[in-house]
Image 1 (cartoon, rainbow, N blue to C red):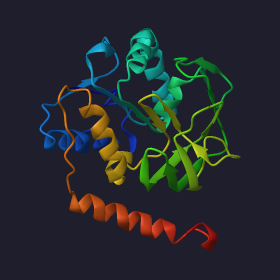
Image 2 (image 1 turned 180 degrees about the vertical axis):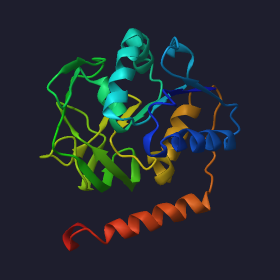
Image 3 (image 1 turned 90 degrees about the vertical axis):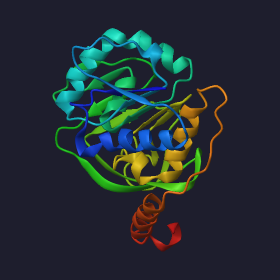
Image 4 (image 1 turned 120 degrees about the horizontal axis):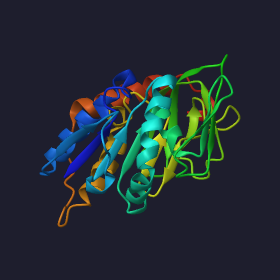
Length: 243
């Protein structure tokens, strides 16, 4: 099976490459033969050959450079999404899936237009916060960290419901997006490393693409202890009526 790490060198703030390294390990532990392919600026992209597509977070400037490159291959990515290929875009990479991104200077940049939402960056406001969220995909609460200067309007199918943190806009507790097997979120950390239940969900979605695959539950003691320590510490900061 082939996993694609998009813009591994330029969209890798906050150690987001950890998502791919740990995901690869979990998939191999399921007995799957895994190849991770890195593609970046200047590379041709054919999304038809991959079983999973990932992009991490970058600076606002890097995002625009990457977007300009990715637009050429927009149709191939859209087709992969419609086929149900699992996709994870974390940090500001997921903003590229919308119809436009307006930067802090007011310049509007055409985005991929795969989903009908818009992003607007702020020049004087940055949202930096820990996060706790619920998610319909998994039973366990999700934890993470947010560092962004943008708001996303018009997302019809959010991924998370926050009890702590900043949502897609300043006036909502809904965060990220979920469409088919596409997950997009500003939660970083890295997301899959910090959340064993979400990692398990993703491993199953990828594994199902191989005929005859049967998921075998695995126990990862240190990942589970790290998650519990993080969640317990963050939960103590919630108001009593939200714990």
